Amino acid sequence: MAVSFMRRSILAATVAGAMTAPAYAEEADSTSFTSMFTEGKASFNFRYRYEYVDQDGIDRNAKASTLRSRLTFTSAAYKGFSFLTEFDDVTAIGDDDYNSTANGNTQYPVVADPEGTEVNQAWAKYSFDKASGAYGRQRILHGSQRFIGGVGWRQNEQTYDGFRALYKSDAITLDYAYVYNINRIFGPDDGPVQPANHHGENHFVRGDWKIADSHTLTGFYYGLEIDEDNDYAAGKTVGNSSDTYGLEYAGTFGPVGLKGAWATQSDAGDSPLDYDADYYMLEGSFGFSGVKATLGYEVLGAGDGVGFKTPYATLHKFQGWADKFLITPGDGIEDMYVGLAGKLGPVKLAGIYHDFAAEDSSDDYGSEIDLVATWAYDKNWSFQLKYASFSSDSDAYADTDKAWMTVNFKI
Image (cartoon, rainbow, N blue to C red; front, side, top):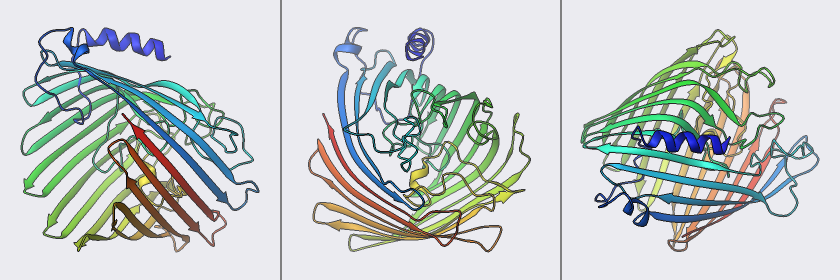
């Protein structure tokens, strides 16, 4: 599959331009086609992680020791053209005492980091004036990644195969992507319970308007039409097609930050479901003496027993790091959260408390405490300790404690 994709990408690079997320800013054009390679940049990244999971109802605790190795080559630009190739390998170090969703170790809690090697990104792009376009396998990160993201927390990143066009001026950014395949974190190979890829015809449309300094209004549409594979349980591929329209606002008023969002969603394509559900979020923050306090309220509603779906979000960022609500419950979910972040010397510290409840009923789902400490030793080395503790009186959700130790090295 990887070889076939690379051939298609190389062929496409000769006839079409491409663009990925604007993280790769262009320097002055190279003077020749050859210098695209000689003036390009190769980089290496190694991320080791130890993840421990203690989950009620499962006798054995997960102890996942994994290493992700990444090699990236970014070309220089020549007459507006450039390209990027990136390879990832995920390897278990020592015993794989965890359920990766692919290794069959179901006696342990899930740590969704399957082993494997794959092409993580391979794109070509063409940039001109304020516009650009891209074809290939690429990273797409929209806003906070609440709807479209890369799930960069997991060792195998989520990337997208397709075409993306971008226009960016001082006040307006327009972003359109046609995606025919999503490379999910459960790959590179299909597992017994999770498919590695979601094939289909998907349209991501997003527009940002800077209405004033430090104030941005965003509109978006996500049309998901995912090919259904009945070899997997409902919800893995079947029933994920949907149409989502929404608005976001983000702004600051001195030390005060304010964010808000609203979206509505309904079934689409060949989905066997019939529902309408809403999403909304309001968050305020206040910075003082190097400390930032945050208070937020987020609701993913439900309709006819179907919860609002965000299958391509970076879900680990939302509703607690214990990952208890990766699928929205049929009664919807309300998340009231409060956080505090600051620094102690060179170490960044943060803590968040979540209270979870059903949106359509009076059910109490539970609560969670999340803590993290991050130390960027220098430009090459960084270290992180992270902890999540979820507790609930509901039979539907098991008490869970998770702890992580991460070491990141890049050159």
